[in-house]
Amino acid sequence: MTNIEELVKQQTEAHGKTRESLMPILQAVIKSERFLSEDAMVAIARELDISTADVYGTASFYTFMDTRPKGKNIIRVCKTITCHMKGKDAVIGALEDLLKIKLGENTSDGKFSLLQANCLGWCHKGPVMLINDEVYPEVTPESAVEIIQKYLKEK
Amino acid sequence: MDNKIKKVDLIFEKVDYLNILDRAFKRSQDEIILDVIDSGLRGRGGAGFPTGLKWKFAKNEDGDQKYVICNADEGEPGTFKDREILTQVPEKVLAGMALCGKATGANEGFIYLRGEYNFLLPQLNAVIDKFHKEMKKLNFDFTIKIKSGSGAYVCGEETALMESMEGHRGEPRNKPPFPTTSGYLGKPTSINNVETLVFALMIANEGPTKFKEMGTFDSRGSKVFSVSGDTPKAGIYELELGMSLEDFVNEFGDGDTKAVQIGGASGFCVARKHFKETVIGFEGIPTGGSMMLFNSTRSMYNILTDYLEFFEEESCGQCTPCRVGCQQLLKGIDAVKKGIKPPYYLDELQKLSETMRLASKCGLGQSAPNPFNSIINNFREEIIY
Image (spheres, chains in turn purple, brown):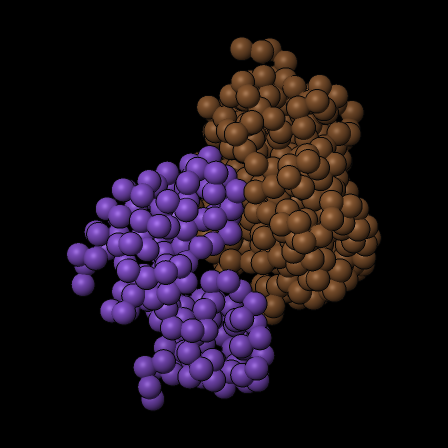
């Protein structure tokens, strides 16, 4: 059994094999792998006894369920209205320069993905960014760079 | 400070919620519901359906399996109050769910928490564990689980939310049947916004009169507002309903407010000339809490583009008026701005937006025309030149 099949099996045991468990299982795979590989979706479909197309169809609906490889740390900068007004473009520009990638790309070492997201619910403290599940409100280009440098120091 | 703005402290006030529940559980289901109906409380997520009626419909359904859902899929741009409520007073939200469960005859509750708020999970799960023990002491068999979202705005629509909970694409269902008849897994379900549940608990605590005395005939009580944009006082405020937009801007504006977007991206943009006669409430312009202020340095074209990009991305794509309409409105204003289309093309787009309003399946496509029309009508020249 491959690692991903192992993980899917573990998660089906924890959440059950009914259709309602599909979301928690997909979310658990995302948490561990950062994206849903074809192998993962095939394994989930087999465990839940539904078609792989159904699994892909569901996953591809949700913004936070990527079906293409993503970095170990996913940076999502809020782009909606007030964060736009408060300077999210400058934050993204600083991160692009630091990571040497464009918006939507992964770093070549697989450590980071840089994305935009729709409203993250911190409009009074914009611009805001999410790194995986962690929130960083009121970032400036300088503080955003400092935050990423902390992540860079980790393995 | 202008005394026309009345600050209230019901939502964030610390209360002995177990004592409130203990007293409420000694009353009949009908008595609990009647108090909520009598208070005039309407849903605080934006749509404003009378909460007591919703509970009554769910209670009147037959069936031993019913559900309570707390809608914490707060995705409306400019709204951030539910996150704050869940951070500061999570136990009051859980108590509101238990109250709803008791009143409607449900023993299971779910919180549908948007994926963007996953950082709240450890803290919330701890509060839920403690709450389960407390419910046992009160002899009420009621459990709460959290279901997480994964970044889809449309899942805040109640039937899309249930589709998502059931493991499907978050595509809204046809209504009727309404969730109180056939909701999660086809069972009677009362789904309420986070803030609504806390108000229901406070009404059970103090009786309906105090709540009813606040606000206006159509908009009873108070409401938590999320204030953002060009304001020196961005943040969360609980205010009595029924104030005029002028009073609001006098309190929260930066002295240069040119327009206010009431009700988030799906709400209405009001220009300065209409501040005086605009009432914030169900008789005027309702809001799920979002109040975004714009000053004279802002381009309304850029703001409208942001809103339309948001809807274009978040439309679930299930029905044509919304899927194609959102794209075409965005393309259309771009073409007018660039001179590819003549200014009167905006009139054609407004006809399209009327089709979207009438023919879209859910609130997303029906309300995407709101910011479009209100910005075009008030700031047409900024869109064209």
